Length: 159
Image 1 (cartoon, rainbow, N blue to C red):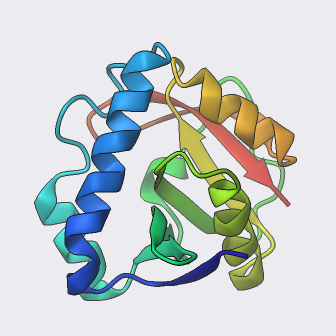
Image 2 (cartoon, rainbow, N blue to C red; image 1 turned 30 degrees about the vertical axis):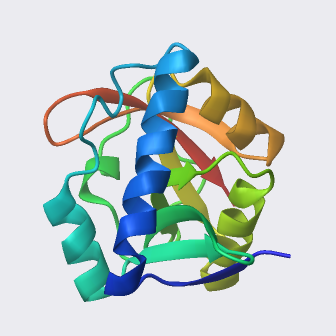
């Protein structure tokens, strides 16, 4: 069974390996543009560790990594082509990555729902694998949100 805990600086080399694996997987599955070759940037990961928003999924070693935020996501303030299901306080999952071990997202979702049963997440149009995973786990597609740089993302919510 997987455990989730806050990431620490000592986890950093393995976190980088997991994100590299995820970027390679994205390219192989038709999603080369969402994270490109260097997302998430080193500075973002270091800041997430520093403020306590980066988490690792472990079971005899690290198998996954993600960011979790309990405050409202500013890019979720406007949604196009749909609507959020609920306006109550929510948690947001970002930058989910795994090393190919099955069940990592289930552990991420359990952690998020233990923090707040109302969860939002978004993904790139080309990330059909993540879209499938989200829908399999009961998330509903709500519309399109735009990142700070203007890139559109499909918004999902689970209440």
